[in-house]
Length: 405
Image 1 (cartoon, helix red, strand yellow):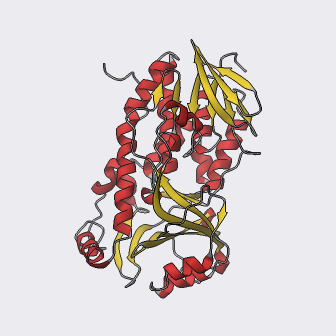
Image 2: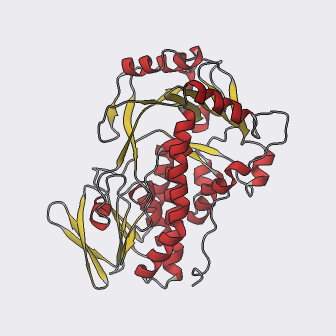
Image 3: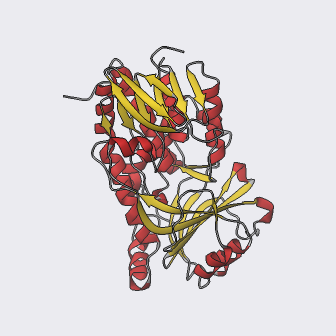
């Protein structure tokens, strides 16, 4: 291990991706995870075409493909009538051709994480440390000193705060208070395929949009599992992910919706729930040799299914600029931040807007259905157009030169 490693606070998807991206360019990295072990909580993750280019940069494409499912369509259905609102064919040649040879994918969060973790463990430039909660940091000239719970200290040449929504690094760097509570609660569960009624299983990502609710479902692990995420408006607030939900509350929220929706929800008695939070977009999240990444930098609501994708983009861009800056991390972190903030802010803002669309009620719901019926994807016989999502799925190119002055 080099005497001047990069320090990464947080061993989630973003933190491991940053460590791997830097290690592949020859830098030593030390990752500090507060949990007793390196693991990921959650179930399904959607993978837009934009993130597959990042997997290539990280050398993970083949490993990811072993676990991915490629759905045929993204479907939005009205949860009161059962009618298709819009259907986007993401599994065919037209989609692949439009987005540079990439399809749309879904993967179990644990599988994606395990691929990253095993790859990091196998890399001789990456050191992984569990049970090490990061409390604060101090810059000392060309060094950053990280204070750990229990009194320990570690030094490195730079610090990346990838410690999530409740980031300690962000709290010190930006001092911008707590995250914004959205008022939406998500219940998540996974069913074995054998327990899914045959008429409800399909190789699509399906979103049932109801008044102040929605349900998403899609297959995972080569079709062995079925991922369910139910979201509704509530004033409840419990910090954290690993909290059990109340099935009675869930069923009451969806009681007026289509039988297909209620049949799926009734299949599960144990749900994990969490409160959805985000932050206002930030223009700056780097200072000196310290920067933020992923949810620590730009936490977003789940309604574009891009949180993990943005963290992976961050990791690849950050490492590319660090190398291009000759490992001048203060300069590299400015380049990285300036390259990323508008794109990630657009995703944050658009995700909020999509939440309003999904949960529309009354006349607003009717306007939504009427408006989307006129958009490409509403007519199954027309050649599909994907220009509405091109800004997102075209993704970014890995930097190969410093930004223009």
